[in-house]
Image 1: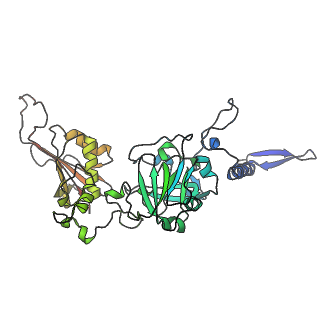
Image 2: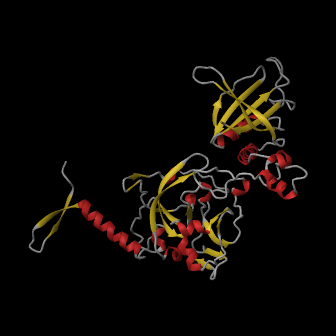
Image 3: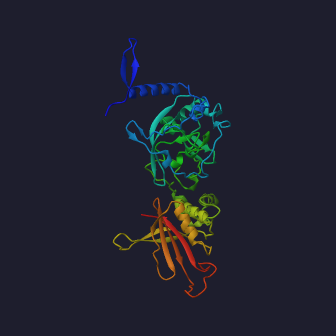
Length: 412
């Protein structure tokens, strides 16, 4: 196969072949230098080039390999935000640097980018079990804090997002590491779905620390601040390789939550899914209860309060020999007479994979098992009344006295 070539003419009129790849590299290098020098405007970054309207603009191409490393696609990232993608207006957007600082800042998008930029391939790990390797470009959070004049006693940095989400990290984390406030992912600007205008690239932290749509960086002296998911029991440090959940102190164990434990601790328990989960004396597993509350809301069904239980988890491997496990978990009972289908649909839409397919325990009963990220949920139906083939079908396929329960726990 012949190599593609172009030609340039020398002063003597002779045409000299030149490898087109080398020319392209040189051209792109010039473009890169112009970019780093600040020659490109904010409009350039967002794909709104100030050029002749007759010129057709092309969308940026996503980088899928960088310095020999394969990269994940930005289209593979699931949306697990609390309110869905946010659309930020650049005309009115300002990044606030507030709190314990000498000079509070309100920076435009262009002003944030008007400083040294850095690029790095960094892995994002989500507590739900997925991960992504991405090429990030951004500015150092450390530079922003220094320019605002963070006070010596400010030991905590709190991040606020457009959708109300918050999280925090120690100030030392940013001073001791090159942590980016990212604006480009895989060579292209962030989109509303991926956090535009800025996402915190919290390297070596779980994904719930990678806050998107950042609007404010607050300097604080409160190391006990708890963000959106941290209030549900997730680790405040967010360190990879450590437990995703905050350990309970001995005096804060579920067994100690009784009438004598104090109102403050009981209120901390109730914050998990308040006001649905109110009996604080029962204790809780934050992740399990939160998932059950998500199912409850998605199914638009009324449930009883969850109570401690033993989840009977049964599986049939390929050899059809039943494996039965007993999992410490929680059970809630559906109070709606026709909620079975809605609960099953909600489980599937929330990302659960069906693992047990309608294993009947007897006439008029059934059991469905679902798994997601190490959690198992069993949807069980037990009929108390039946009607024959010649009898008229009742108003509700499930009688109001029938038993519909959802039991969830952690797989070993």
